[in-house]
Length: 388
Image (tube, rainbow, N blue to C red; front, side, top):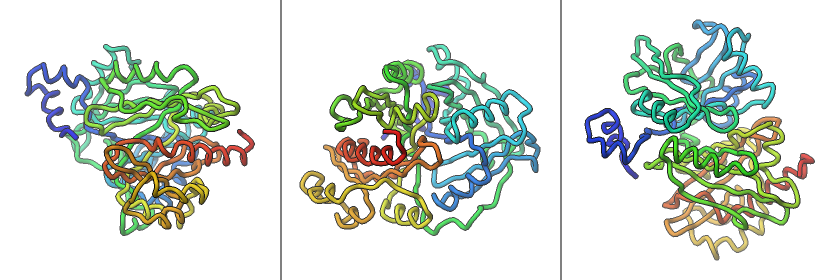
């Protein structure tokens, strides 16, 4: 994996233009996943207790934000921001209120840290991105942050964040905050592995092309046809990523099948394209799942039959098969190694946003060997909800 520092110096002008051309849109990683929610205080409490995250910053009426309340939680390099509207008074507040009313709790922003927000915004808009917010600066006693924003599928945006000159808890306007509960002794997860978007039938290639053209991302994986299909439902998926693989975005679309797929269900209840799930990287999925289950997180079930022949095709892993069976953790192996993964049920009343826990051992895949088992598990939940 390449060191993003080389890309940073390139973009700041200390290297020849040929290097810039080789990486026209350098990124440093995911900056934050920003959620619009009905009650940010309660969401912050849930992710603190159920996901072991730590509240680090807050913005609200107590420190000058009369319109919105925002809670910033972290775990390792992962950062979630939960924002709700107190009383709409600007276009932004109205957008947030209308977004929650239309879509329920959901992701509105996959913010990306870049070495130069102005250059990133210029490149993106020159190559066809819809500009939402031209570059601007925010300053306080901790330094300066440069921000800009472009639109992607649905009402989702990518805020481009340049924070190398800033050492505050999140952004100017946010105050440090004490944890809501005592953080667990061991982190439940360490980083954001990938963020999955669901788009309408026939639009996957359009958005894959968007990331190629606008950000210089390239394809990692492609799953079509029988790769992701059961007797009843199917989808198509392509994965785009930056050159360092720090930012990975699978893009899904539904495929025609006998019944509604999970993508169809998401689009129906979310109302349009949006972020379906966030995969969280852990170095101990067993401890993570045990802690999250104990805190009330619900995971998709996997039949015992999945584990009866697991060793024959997945080989040996660091976790005994009986432990995998007990916790319903899935395994996939490819030419580079293996991964362990498990998926939560939706974390709000609408069957929309959910999470994946993933532990990688060499494999940079996305669990292709588990798609059928995963789909069948989701279909069982769809059947219970009456949405299959």
